[in-house]
Length: 98
Image 1: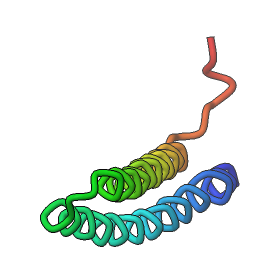
Image 2: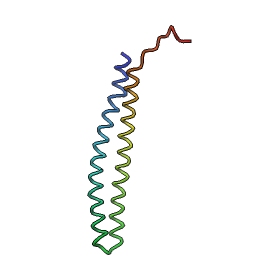
Image 3: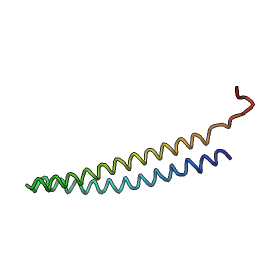
Image 4: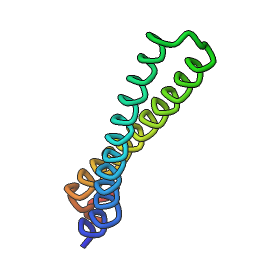
């Protein structure tokens, strides 16, 4: 009973969160690649510095989003892993407690 409860309360949300945030991180990675390509194109062919600064700011926004999504995915995976460990711990025997 205890291990099922831990599984439902900890492992399932952690696994779902890890998958969900990893999917969003993948989307942010693709957007970052596009944004960086745009930044490189502007850096090579444009002489307007304000346009270059705007492209860099957009690229940095995608970098921060990717970092945040990656952190949430890892934290969710750790949460699920802690739950899995909790599911496999032996039950405490109250008669053997000090």
